[in-house]
Amino acid sequence: MRMQPEIKKPSAILDLLSFLRPFLGFVCVPLILGQTTQGLTFVAAVIALALLIHFVTTASSQRHVKGDDFRLILDSACESIFHFTIYIALMLMGWFPIWALFVCYAGDLLVPYLCVLARQRGANVVYRPSLTLRTATHALVQAALILPHIAGPALAPEASPSVSFWLSCLAIAVTIVTVIDYSLAILSPRTKS
Image (cartoon, rainbow, N blue to C red; front, side, top):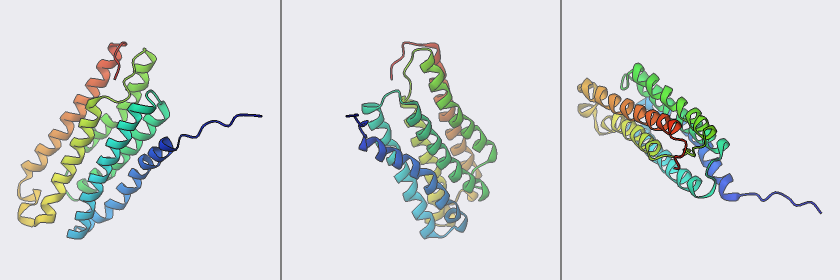
């Protein structure tokens, strides 16, 4: 009698949750472009939900499937697509600069490759605190750019272009810190995360 491989239901559920995030991002784009209070409120809730999904999948992955390349790439890709779609909509509204969008997305693309490269050198750096910091910062920046439009036009970033600029700089700074953190892990093959 052949043994069937054990199906890990929690892993499948986590993969499904990760895979849900890009679709949530695509749903949010027309809502941001529509600029209705209800739509923007929904988007803010979706951003919070996506951040919660990140926390749940990261915590569970650290506990159960440390070192799973597929899960790392799936989770990173889904997270990047989610944030990228939100940032594109914010950029189209003039609330987020295009140069910041590309820097943040480039950093998001580098992290999974740096993880695989670090693992080839003997380090397990799949989930580091800087990754969660980056995700939380992107969510904070996106929410901070959307919430004033929910509250009313007097609080919107157009009234203060410097708010959008400094929030963009914050997103870029945390993205760069994450890339540096993962790059340093490559140089330190005994690193365990």
